[in-house]
Length: 433
Image 1 (tube, rainbow, N blue to C red):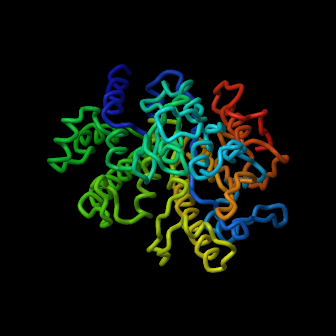
Image 2: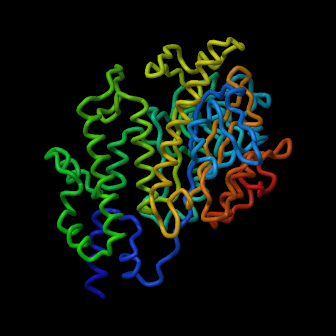
Image 3: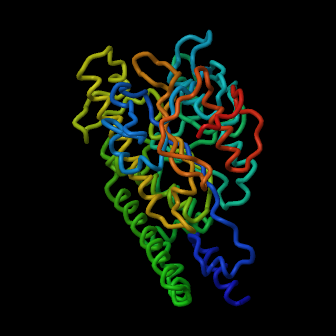
């Protein structure tokens, strides 16, 4: 038994492994599948009329912008009536986009400054990471598709640090997100030795080359179910490596001085690479907490893949122009398609008596409802997953008027066994989930 346990420990040290019954049998008192907590942010509000779902015979029906999620309706709830009051001006004037990002996970009013005297609050993900982050190799995983910004003037007198960061370690320090899939991959699967990992990449060797023999020996000792699961996992890792290598060989064509070579030319591929990395991090229990900012609020990215060449932010000031509203709806649907791809990736990953989505709680939404109004009430929010049986998805749930979004966060932390009395402007729990 000791030899078997040491062997399993050895390969697990070299490469993070998904839960396997054989591995659990070699470790005393193996724990049940843990809950994972993630927050996925999209910018600039939505086409409100196209976003709205309905109930048909008591079942959630997703149409138009949310239609790509229709096959997953039983795994998510649409939350209505949740507000971020601290993202409103409250006497601070313009700057709704910066406040939308800064407030989304903190529930706090950002001090209006473009200097170094930042003031916000600790974000919900970092409250969780402080308490349970030590249980995994990576405390929390912060992802984006935007370049990191920690300073500079961005939105109407607000620092770029507010607009380009969702996650905050403390009241003055953001936890910058990583946009380069290669850097995320090395963080999750690399040796931790930059020189050694750089040499491996220079020699064009796969991370799997270093565990090939151990993996073969391990597969010989596993049952058929575990062998299949391990093979699927190793295949996923190698396919991800190959996609990153392809992006490095054919980087994005848009000129940008600080753009890493590993950024794919396709925005869709960039998002999906980041989602795949988050999924693998959850699958291997490398982390249980993650955030992903699909783009910062105020992003003026065009969508040539949708034949939309005007910027998203520009379109969001639609003034009820039908053409602009139609473009916004198509962008909303594009983002929903990527989120649906991610949820399906989690759902098809077996874990224990269910799947990875069953053991996750994922908030998908933005800090602005209608980009033309810049309003931060009744926000567009979805909650996906079953939270290890603690959530009841498949519903449309309306909060009482004036309910802070942070009340939802407190209820999610409860399900992560994280003790928190308050987050930002919270007034209690939102337990109807």
